[in-house]
Image (tube, rainbow, N blue to C red; front, side, top):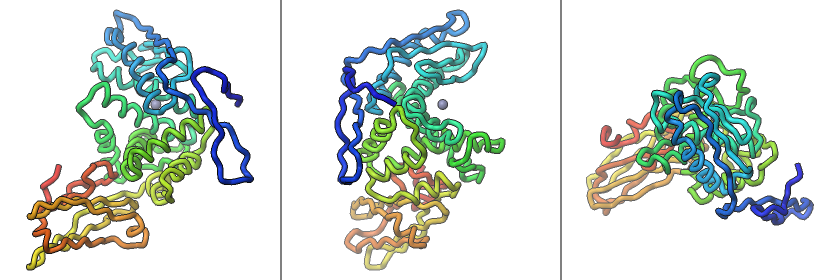
Length: 359
Ligand SMILES: [Zn+2]
């Protein structure tokens, strides 16, 4: 589609390329500069939906937060929310518009959540035109992620990424998952569709952010939105964008968690102290899904360090990894796997040594 590169809120520049065969395509770089005005409309019935008196504030915050976090300014002149309790519970997204229930009898934060979610859809699939039926995880996962991210600004105090991840991991542990790479119409009844389309892909965004580091991940996330705005990306465009910024092959991640429903479970195995001081700490991979491991070890001499086990160790077919703690460090007093808490690990009880010293 044609893009208007002359409008005030956009700048264009040539995409840099080291491939002399490739044609230089203009890339649109939207600017979040605080000068764009978006009308926030809210239509509701006072007698049926009293919570809606505050809804316009949620709409304003969501448009501002999402514009800033995605680095892609909301591109239209208005965002309109309509209360439609007679025809809907929950919410549904349309371009520049959402229809949502009254949320009567529920918490104000519930109305906030659905507002942040439906407005999140203005970025995906409205700006970035993913296929909602064939790859529901692309728009619902990214939107659930953005909803959780914005919730923590408006209602601070709870890590909503962790809350959502826990629900997904319970289903994963119960072996009730169905794969993400499946047409939306082909899920069996049960939690399969909801987990694969909403909770899991949102949790995977956070897990990948933890693996790549926030800076590189955010560049990839924003590049995906900017480069695929008003285009039709496939899952492989999504995968490629993140691999480009990770500067690494992430097939182990896509295969384990997007194509398959493999379960990930890292565990602290034996911790064997040596008479001369120091110890051998064994980390075990008890699942099928590949994931790097981060191990935090504290010792009696006050040492506190994090050891990284790269994915290549597991990809080579190993299911065990030994960490030698030097005698000078003293004895090991605590071992913790995934101190950040964002790895999609189904059993966190075995992430601690001594057992029970964790969550
Ligand atoms: Zn949605």
